[in-house]
Length: 286
Image (cartoon, helix red, strand yellow):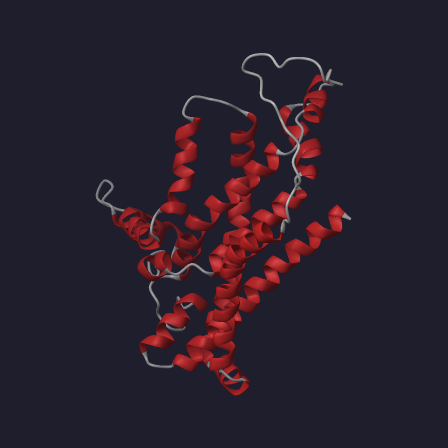
């Protein structure tokens, strides 16, 4: 306890007690600024719901083109999310645990798909697969060896989704590994475990929440991807049409009700997927 008769030293900060005022003005300001964005999101969803009707929603879901888009969306988003987690787990681990020359460059490269316009991603993929490589290109190489084309086909849908979604998954997994205490892993190494054993038996079981979060974020991001798919895979009905391009195609032919119905379906799917991961996180915290 400080002596009340002591003299403050030169340069010392002296705190004087004062009566605290009400917190309501501050909380009102903060709530108003943050609530304005929430209100905007809720208002947009309410406008979509008010515009369409259950009959329009059911009629849209009964169209063969939209049913095909739903199936392809579920398949492509799931494959893209699995590939994203498969790549993001080792990459996020290496970026979290090791410091090596060029690490900053890898981090920058991973962030490129996040900040670039989506159309640029699709255009870059298109150029990559048609770039001349010794008298051939990647598109011809895949077609000769795999027996199917990539560009303007369903593989292009998955690759376009993966190119963007994986970047979000890597960032999620890197943060996940950053939050895991490395001491248990170091103990396992000192007890004779190989690095691979320590990773699989010590680190990975602790990262299961991050794995679910990375999968969910990658899936949701793949669901909303449009630009790269439009450029690299096209928007051919009953072939490369997913829900995001369905909205564009329905708008292009003047079917606004169907476009809004598909948009609401995408909102419900995204809310369902994101709700699952939040419920899992709440159960773990309890």
